[in-house]
Length: 434
Ligand SMILES: Nc1ncnc2c1ncn2[C@@H]1O[C@H](COP(=O)(O)OP(=O)(O)OP(=O)(O)O)[C@@H](O)[C@H]1O
Image (cartoon, rainbow, N blue to C red):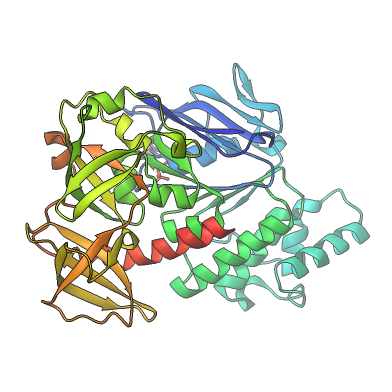
């Protein structure tokens, strides 16, 4: 099976497994609202296998909801196609009405009927079934979402989290072919969101539901989804596993948007040491990457050697050996035996570990996660070692540097980025274990 994330300028393909059939297929989908200059969704392609959970994240206005609404049949597409379980829903003159698509939806505002009790809310989509069957399905759904006793209650008697569980039960009761979730946790408080996100994943996996979720929150996306898409200005920048998005972002934007990191300045070494020569190599596949030739990059924190990732291929014809290398906090290891030293600028205690913001001698900033028994004072110089197996590098051009959200040379510590980096690391690793 192949996941394709396509933009007009390039196509990125990630091979996940060879045998799974596709269930949801969106191909070159474009949506343009009347009297708007740019398309809200611009030639987006993505795919989900049966039972697979996908999430779309991206800044406000990047087209996530428009894409979801088009899949639901609530927004017409100007180009491209949507197929579900082999059936063409949209495209080539075909437009299956929303109510005939057998697609369920869960919205952020729960949208339960206030005048119906919980059981009747869940049974709402089961009209046409006999009473006994309806009751059995409702009881099954209540048990599934962990609220077996809630049937006689009214929505206002439930907490926000409970209401959202009921909304999920209602959407799942008619056994939709696909479930769409639009910001399902955004009206809940932060702690509840994370718990519910994990529970929702569990429920969807148990019911083998195929689902696509839209969220602003990458933590939610990582907690729920098997595959996550990063959208920007109507285009899908990358469609990949949480782990790959975090460690192998395909573009500068994805590198910055996911988890945050630091882009450290470096210089390619060797006879072919320019970004153009590397760009002319065949596109790197994540799972074949290990067979690729290694490259070397000289940085102020040491020499990096590793397999270059496809990120470099996005940088068109840059005649330069200057690159920026993505370093996550867990790539920078505290090691007093290392000749490379950095000054502790800021430290943040996180229980099992410290998140250090470090400055190299030349002023470039790094983030480092270290076990909390490595307790160093602000101002202290410590040894560091970079431990990176795959090199995520971006050719450094003037325009690229100008666009950097995470400065390669940062005079001040990126305080706001720090907690995010660690949390995202944790979640990305957790996702990779599943
Ligand atoms: N009904 C509409 N008419 C005109 N333009 C629209 C309409 N709905 C959305 N847009 C525009 O389409 C673009 C994509 O909007 P969309 O709501 O899909 O983005 P989003 O990523 O879901 O944003 P958010 O996260 O804020 O919900 C935006 O520029 C938005 O202004």
